[in-house]
Length: 280
Image (tube, rainbow, N blue to C red; front, side, top):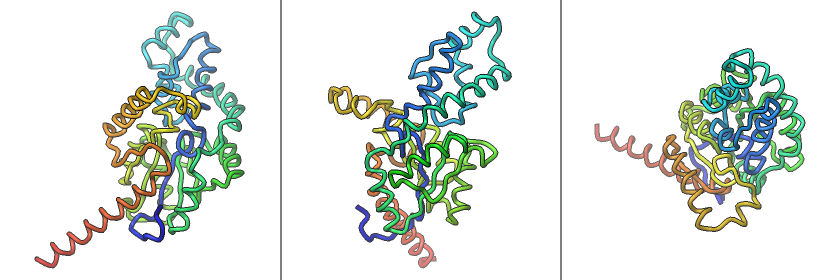
């Protein structure tokens, strides 16, 4: 626990699905699978998860650009999917997701306790997401029932572009009144989250269990062969590291130790700078 340790980190910016709520990040996956199924095009969960973290329209466009999907579209409709097709898919996708979101907005174990500890130590809580403002009204309202209430919720609707652009993180910094960016930590469960944090100049942390990179439910995790589970965890950690994550944690509760380590690193950096300045 952070106890009463006070350092340089002033705020944490969390992703939502797969990080704060919806263990395994299943709501978007189910909606995307259903969307393309209506066109008689069968996606796989792995294909969907490849682009997790993007805005939903960008996600649909990326799925359409998969060669197998594009070829299937040509076979069925006589042409490759274009912007008009993407717009049509997105309009159909929104009500599908809105309908199922209430069933996938329960907080991940440990999140409420983490929020309490962060606030006890004076750390502000922000958030970014790939969901639109209308989608987040549903998710945030449900999460609030469990005591999970960030200080700030920023969606792609509020900025020029979503992940991996840093605009949502910058908006968080402005609304929370935090500067410089190294005083903030970005936490998420996708490569897009990692890149978003890095592009914003924040400390970037990837969460493995409960996230989309693993794509497993709590039941699947608890019953999986330990060797297979360990391998999946290692693969997820590798992807986050390759994306440039400063830290990778297995569970959201481990973030407290990350913050403590960052604070120590920032303190050492400041002391080193002071010594260098004094010598000159």
